[in-house]
Image 1: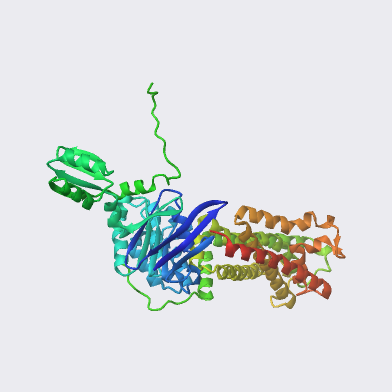
Image 2: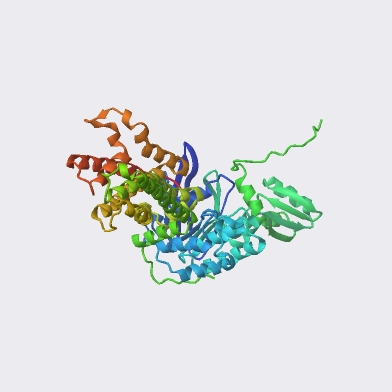
Length: 306
Length: 268
């Protein structure tokens, strides 16, 4: 299990990670989302002992990373796909890491096969595409057959087949009982992969929920009725926002399905349909991180409207 | 998919870290290229010096036995220390420049065993290369020196001691260069500083004032290490040996402590 408790880190007075607490349970894939500069990578680096937190604890299987006798057997990490010497072969890169933990060359060859790098195992890492580099990084992470995995943007640079491979691999690793923490900017991909989502914004946790709650909890309620105008007036008086989709259908936000049903029953309005309109993870993400984005594009027009 | 291959969590052992560091150095072409150039340059300089000895033979009657080859060893070492320093510097800086330092500290999170293993690897490779260089110099110059009566047996104790002394001198230079490179984390900067320190004695040494009753140049790494290793095959005053040893150790220990603290604490 991965456990982060009140983790805080600042650089030159700027808070990068602010009192962050979460857990990643074995047997689950947890998505780690947030805009650029949200503190995801810093949090992952503190988990792996690459940065010292100002306060708080980051534990893996109950211990700090540096306290483990055989750390790469506990956690496999992918932080930087380019962290291989350009003049060294993929196999040699893996052999070097394997030596520290007494891992056999057979296991090295196994993970090369698992990552689909057989044909390029003796090729210099400097000749690798970003996607091949990611596969090498995944091979490094799997080398120690770890009980937990921390993967920072593992699908960066991968082709659709590679993205699909990561998805099935991470799902499979979680099914085997491992805890998987994975950050990504690809919301649609994360929606298909993660069981749980942690959203960071400006170093703080904005959401830590099951994926199903994130994509439904912030959604709208669709109500179909023969008296759409009456129902719209009714729920507006209750403080909800209403969008009339067609003559008989409303989409209501700011009011629960139960409250809408109760209001309709009390006022003699017949509901034909009352359902949650699922939102995409991307919509939920933007909604959660609005105001937490450090760098935002400003839209400008080439012509002066006047 | 991945399968549980391991039944036990074998802890990290220093022998494993050492094997990893040896693999790192030997899987880089730059290691072999530097070693090959160093040995070739050793042979070339040795032959050139031997030729000088041959031509000037009538005027150098006092030079006999192992003295001629000792002089060649000394001249060649001036150049080989540059190759050794470069090798020691890239043993650590290539990790910073390629980002593999992150992989190293993730594999060995307590970090200091990784740095200690680098010291052992650099010292071992330096010793091996230095002895090979001495052997190459002997092999290429013997046929030239024998005819003019300046040859010596390969088992001559003075010659063997001088070869060992050269190896120890170069190990001191290599460990110092490695520690300095760990501190500055930049190959070009580290090599520049090492060059200034090694050759500063030639340029600025004689102009330095006396410090604690001895000339200032005695406190340079190259001078002190040279004096300390000279004692292996030449009669030397004990106080000179002790002072030289202390200065040499200081050049290794002080940057060594700084490098260890920084390597253990800095973000990578």
